Image 1 (cartoon, helix red, strand yellow):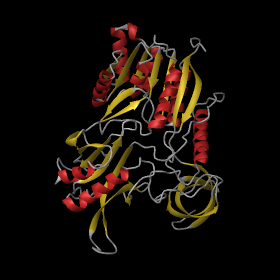
Image 2: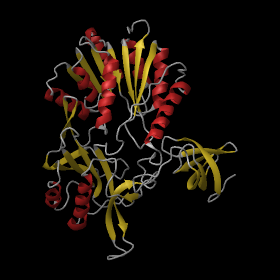
Image 3: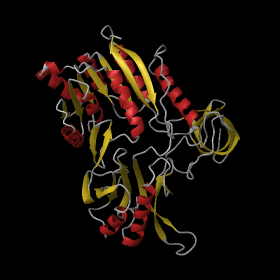
Image 4: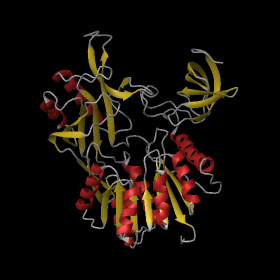
Length: 466
C-alpha cells in the first residue's frame, strides 16, 4: 500500500478526461499529473484512496515518443491545456484512439469505421473567447512587499488557485492588451477583486469574446454588484484597443462557483458582437453559447451539412439548437428547419439571428424537445422530420429525447457530440431502435486539451439511399 509523499516509478498507459496520466503498480491505479501516455516517470504520491492514488511526476525517466517541451510558460500550472506536453500529432492520435475505443467498447460497434480526425494547421491562437478569474496575491518582494495586489489568470488544475497570466497562447493576438488594461484599472480605481472565501470584493471574472470574421471584441466584467467605480477610466483604455466595441457588466452576487449571473448591464458601446459562419451572420451576447474555435466550427458544421444530405426539400429538426448556429447554417439548404431549445434567451437570440439573415424557413420553440416535438407533430403532421440533428451537452441526450427521435422515424440522424463516451452510449440506443451508424468523423475542436468533437451519421435501416 502506498503512503503520502512516497516516491514510485511507473509507466503511463493512458490519460483521463481531465488530463492525468494513468499507470498501474501491481494492479493498483495511480493518476499522475504532468505525465502523458508512453512516459516512464518517477512520481510522488500526493493522496491515497482505497482503490487508487494521486501522484505528481517529479522526473521523466523515459519520455514518450510524442513528449515535447510546452511552448506556454505556465503549462503544468494552468489547468487549461492538459496535453501541452504532447506534440500536436500525438494529441491527434490520442483523440482518434479515444473516439475509437468508446465506439467499440461502450457502443459495441466492432465494424463501424472511425474516419481520420480532422485537425488544424496551426493549433495555437484559435480561441475566440477567454474567461479570466480575478483575485488577489500578496506581493512577496520589491516595493510594497506584503501588500495585496490584483491578479488575473487561470485556475490551476483541480483548484481555484489563480495562476497569474499576462496572455494565453490559445487566444487571438491583442487579448493581452485587454488583460493589462483591466489590471491597471484594478490598481487605480479602487475596485477590489472578489474573494471566494469571504464573498466580499467586486470583480470576479473578465470575459472577452471576439468575432473571427469581423474582428469585433466585447469585454464583460463579472461583478459582485451592479456597478463599478470610475468605469469611464476602464472604457477609455479599452476603446483604444483594436476591435473593442463594448464594455458591459454581468451581475453575479451569489456565493457560488458558477461564473455567470443572469443579468447583463450595458456600460459603453455594444453588448453584442457579430460573427459569421460561412455567409450566415450571428449576433452573440456575452452569455450565449458559441463554439470557441471558429476555424474548426466551420469544419464541424460543413461535416454536419454533408451528412444531412439536404436537397432543399427536407424538413429538419435541430434539437438543443442554442442560438440557432446549426439551424441557420442548414436552413439555406432545407425546405424547413425547426429548432428546439430549453433556454428561453437562446431562443430569442435564434429568432433574431433568423430575422437578421432573412431566413423565413427557420422557426424556434422554447421547451424540452421530448415535450415540444410530439405536440407540434400532433398539431401539424407535415412537420414530421426527414432529418434530425442533435448537438447535446457533454452528458449526452436524455433517454426520453432519444425515444422521441425514434418515434419520429427520420431518414437520417446527425449527432454532433463533445463527449465520445456519452455519444457511444446514445448511438447504441439509436442502433437498437432501427438505425445504422454509417460514418463517424472526429474533429479536433480544442487543440491542447483532452476534448474532442465527433459528427456521426445514422440512417434508418431500409430507407437510406447511398
